[in-house]
Length: 454
Image 1 (cartoon, rainbow, N blue to C red):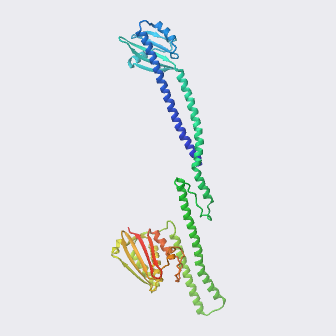
Image 2 (cartoon, rainbow, N blue to C red):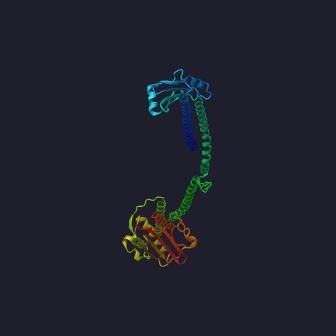
Image 3 (tube, rainbow, N blue to C red):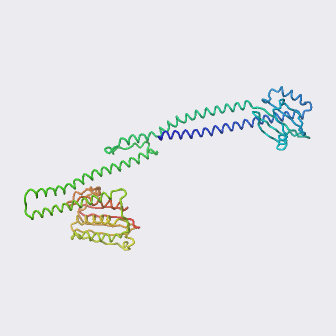
């Protein structure tokens, strides 16, 4: 069922329920008012008749009957019966005996003082009329033709009003539901226009304040993320293809040259060494690309456990210096980081070591003295690691792109692929950490990593 139809039905049911309750309340109230008013008229008529018969000596039952017969303001189908203390009938205008007088009825009137009941369409009132020396039972009956006819007319009017209201509620509900959902229809129409080649399009936010505007704003943010992700993916594929093509082209060219003619064994060995080096570079590039892809997921699979940062730094240092004897890596702990409990963080050991190794390798590789100073501090439950070198530094215009995959500064001439810092940034982000790089071209670079401690 469409939302517009469902809203219309809900509006119709709500409006119909309100009209039904209001109509029932009006009818019940009107019926009650009519009944009370008619019984008051019967009571007044019964008391006046009893007073004339009992208190006026000149009027007897026969005369009173003639007076009432000629009374132009009598009640419709009026019948009055008056009984004395011995239950003898002093007066009766019920010539046909339509009112059934029983001992039970008389006793009820004498005990309760007043009794109301109906017989067919007639409404009957029994009351006790008290005189100075005696008590009389007065029973009066009449039919409220006008009142009942008005109630019947009221029922018809309320039925017509309810039926008309339901039709009106349906039309108005359908109209306003359509108006309320019109912005959504606009959003749907705009979304249908958006494809992978037009992710730059955005949904109209309308007035910018209602729920539809919030939906449009949220959808636009999602489009921005998708556009950014597709752009990064496109650039990544393009750059990765270029980086992969270079060593493959080199390997292919060397092997083709070797096959052109026979060569001395020394040349074969040198060519194989060169191909092997290109293969190692290619393997390293593929491993880095795979790691960068895995860490770029929104919820990466991290094998998190408590880790001592100083131990990971020392281990990373030893591993780097195995293959780079000229690297000088100095690690120091401030007084706030001497407590072992204050240098423990939750994380994945392999990923964190990879991040530390990339930063150390860059610092040593781009410094004339191939050295880096590393310092640990603990500030307000935050473990901070500083990496400082006195290398070639980074131009200010390159700093804003430093974490983009395959981006390399203009002053970089050492071999590499431009993946390291992008990988570091993603690993630190996945560990809820913070990274900040401050650098001046020709003076050196400072990298700051911050992690929350347990």
